[in-house]
Amino acid sequence: MDNIVEVAAVDQAGQLASFSNFSRTKVMLAAPGVRIKSCSSLPYHTRTDSGTSFLAPNVAATLAMMVNRFPGDTYSEIIDRLRQSVDPDPTLELKTISGGRLNIDRALENGFLNWGCRLH
Image (cartoon, rainbow, N blue to C red; front, side, top):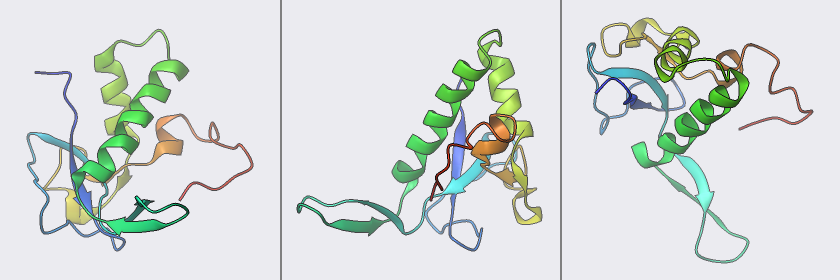
């Protein structure tokens, strides 16, 4: 199906996570998926976890914001914009279609996320 975006997980150093899938013909890009801070079941606590389940919401949210930002684009054009907006990484060239990592700001055409706060 051409409307599925498969994503690989990378760590803080940009290295492919040991648990991540990769494919030069199926996996579109990589995104942070190792040691991600998230909410804990305890009030006012966080925990650190790893997995592709932690990167999927970032990619899905990016695609949703892109649909809003480019309302005239088809889903294929949105996916192509995402592919072209990555931060290139030579270690991912043979492991993903795009050869790079998710760059939300670039996907939304540089500066769109300038809300006066930092995203981590």
